[in-house]
Image (cartoon, rainbow, N blue to C red):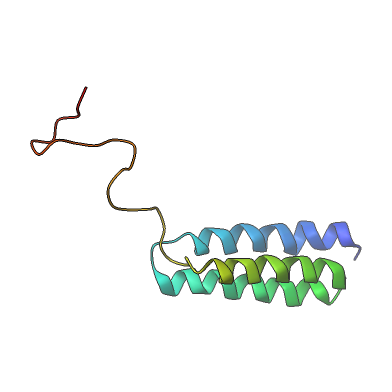
Length: 90
């Protein structure tokens, strides 16, 4: 197996699944996304160490972001401010 095949068969699907899990709303599922990326890094590094290191760096950056499981941002919208009755000011 060459590097292109490894990326097509393992690397790209692992990145897609890991990022999808990482952006989930549950912290447990978000942490699972980081573990999937690390597992993919180990699997890819069997064939090519540099590609495994690239996936490992992505996993470390996901972990360092510290936002696993937060999903979409919630709270007040900083762009739109509403009055007490819910109407948008003009």
